[in-house]
Length: 224
Length: 248
Image 1 (cartoon, rainbow over the protein chains, first blue to last red):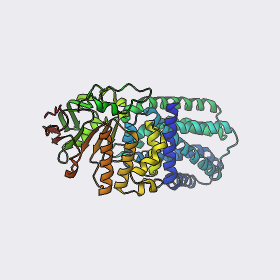
Image 2: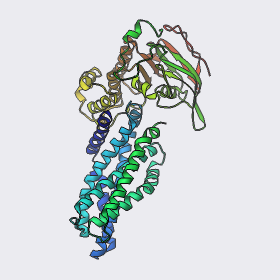
Image 3: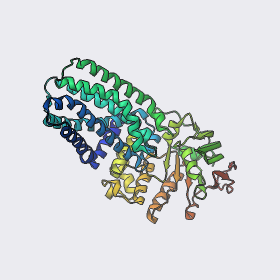
Image 4: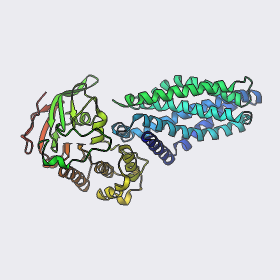
């Protein structure tokens, strides 16, 4: 119960900061929209090709957006040494990890709704084939990205070239999540292949691994 | 001041469910503590004992190791070599118990700039398991009640420091570590810091203060000097009978 209260407090604090700074609205969303429009224009008017590439482009936009969101999330911790405050507080450090992951996951899910609607309009993506698999892909994929981002955000906070180091650490580990999420999304939006459930199972496995690892090691990473 | 006696009755009671306070121990006992950053030693074999209820002033030029010393005491940094205890808890193995009882007020106020003063204190209350009812009173005490709803981003350094002092006042820690708390403050804000120290002393709590400000030393029971990471022999204790500062 105490852990849950601390997770909620950290997540609520991050969401409030995001709501005040409007970073997602002002930077992340325009960035994601620009990526999608640029890809759409470069691929050309062929509707079949657009539909086939849409799940991959959609998740690429989400991946880049998640990197920006996590950088912002840890920037707020570094502005006046607040991360040290979290270190010195007698709280379970797993609560900090889970709270920060939950806050960014929430922001990404809102962003994804907008991005999916945009992709649907631009690329003619069908959303009605398997809505449960589609929703599962986004929820599980987002949790996976949030787990990786929250874990490595703290590692790179003290790094001199953190803007470069963070993607270098996150992108390789996020790739399996990205592949599974893209396949599940493709199947849910009508691409041939079947077996959306197995990709969702893989996403769930990644989520369990990343969240468990983060919960166990975050405290050690936070210490000097 | 001895670790036994009347002053200990004034110490805050241990929180429910926590490990009982180890009141027989000195507030701080460091033995041969060395801290190295890369190849540069910031602390060199520092041995120091601070009694319960004592107010210790740490002086020294820039780069002397004062901040590192306080950050080691507050468990923000680990000693590279050596060890010791704070409030009877081992510096390496019982960090959470030390953190529960210690407030480190440093150069950085550890506030969230996009939250208001009140929201920052509320968040601290959740982290430290403190009742939020006292937030209004403590903000009034540091003179920020009128601006409690404004974002910290718009605050001056002095106002931010006041919020940090308010957080320390709310927590009533057994050990207050103040690292240059007067830096960048106007006279009124300095008074707020002094009041926090006076209140801690009156409650029999231990205070370690590192400052350059020559006008702020009078409040201390004892002064120690640092240079190039080493502790130099301090002045004779005015209140403590156990001055055990040794050079490394």
